[in-house]
Image (cartoon, rainbow, N blue to C red; front, side, top):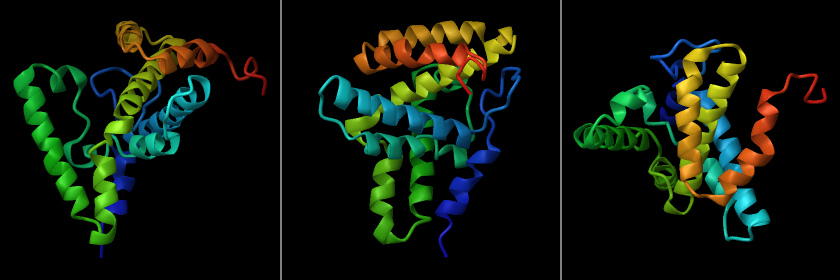
Length: 190
């Protein structure tokens, strides 16, 4: 018996943004889905708009599992996780141990590919990182839309970080898709 997929299904039990008041709670499974959708889009934009080599499907698959170690570690708040170099190093070691644990919950025939996804393939890591930040920015916008000012500073700093990435795929996504997140359902045309 292998427990990998039963463990992955528990991502829905881990809440995000624990230190902030949320109008709409978000769990890690929901977040991972949105990051995968955005990573896939960024990969398509890279390939089809900017003509660069990219595998959008690989980016989406890696994004689905980008927070899987949190099944074991939980979702550590960003200010704590990135407090200083010692904390970053300690957290990376804990994440590595979590990946080892997850990989050991698979049959050997499948463990290699899942380990590559869990450790983030180099060829898509920048897309997944950008998609993760973009999903966080969207969450901030959604909270602000409900009148939750708690997310104002987070939205501003996250947008600055996205722009600082210097990725044309991200800039394209922000320009062409982010404005729709401020619309009502009727305004979206449904």
